[in-house]
Amino acid sequence: MIIRRTNVPDLALLLAALLPHSAGPYMALVVIGFAVGIAGHLSGSRWLVAAGVVLIFLGAFLFPLALNLTESTPPQLRNR
Image (tube, rainbow, N blue to C red):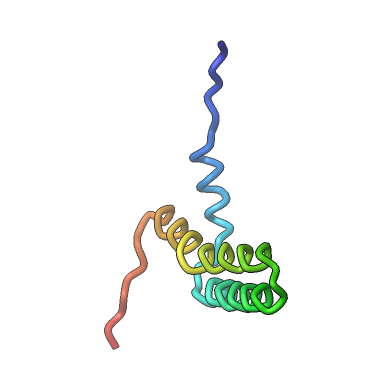
């Protein structure tokens, strides 16, 4: 059995660099997820409801978490 070493962490860091660093795209993804979920409920399609839930989860939790885990320094809060 041959075990190959892959560069998965390197690929993850490269892909995480493509994520936006502002909150706008993540909020838009959550809003789109809610719209897809509502359309799924109105049409009775379970697939659309599931797709809406996945979009909300990605926009609200998974992508921002990946962005925070891959940055070398966390974002700083500024007092105004």
